[in-house]
Image (tube, rainbow over all chains, first blue to last red; front, side, top):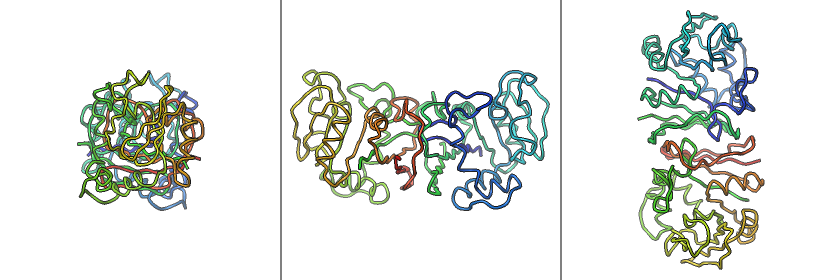
Length: 208
Length: 208
């Protein structure tokens, strides 16, 4: 099973407008992720104590602990593009102890040896289909999580490789930026679960 | 209080692509509204018996009975544009017995005498602000409902005239069409209520 977990604005963006290397989430893009940082399971995954419990935390606990492998786009890994030796964040922006602790497959046209940081091994793979195939093998019986960006999601949807979508709908309008859904064929999905802590609406869909 | 009630696709459209006079909701746009037709309160408002109860029906019952006046754009009234004598649906596409039964204010640059159909009186007003002012007077203590289209919603949001948004998020991707939110300033809202029948997610926001 391949699952998408992604935070999205009410107007459908996964990053704000005018993203730069210094502000990779775009203008106000950090508003999409603020709901996460005070949660107990997020803090725990970063070696911190305390934090809130509840529906938001349940969502993050699954996000952190359930997947057996993660697939992400190059920009989500480092914010950069092009050859690795010209990327100022070639080791990613996730720090020395990235919060994954499962194999992560980063999609890039540029070949590179695997990189291990903390308990997370990053493997660099050319193309969504190949990345998902490797991730499935690494995950065993556990789900594979796609965590963005938008281009990866759209490619997986078009290729029929996405089974479930968990959209974390943040009550903010960004007014522009990177749309999650763009240039897709019309199709129906099935709403399977709705959860909310009162701030963010967590919507889980089966992609038929 | 001015409330928006609108059905929107998962990719943020309130109508599909390539709308025409014959297919005013655009390609697959009817998928946005199918959830409504089998509900008891909708059938009741159209003089029919039976139908389903539950969360969807609760939403529609409020949609139909709570507002004291309704504001809508010209295209939502007739699908047309320009002078009324050139509009093939000049009396609207809502039939002889429109489902409103409260005063409806239709925004149009083109002056026109009021039109009464069944228990609904349509009044034609130039501009969102004037329409909302007249609707507030007509509604008395009851809320004013904006029911679309997207341009009216965006104008009301920009002018600070919208107090609440009730988005009925339909589990369909349309792949294109008329976006509900476009060209707006970044802002935060407050999620106040989440309801679901299992198919559509009904999300209610306060616009601060």
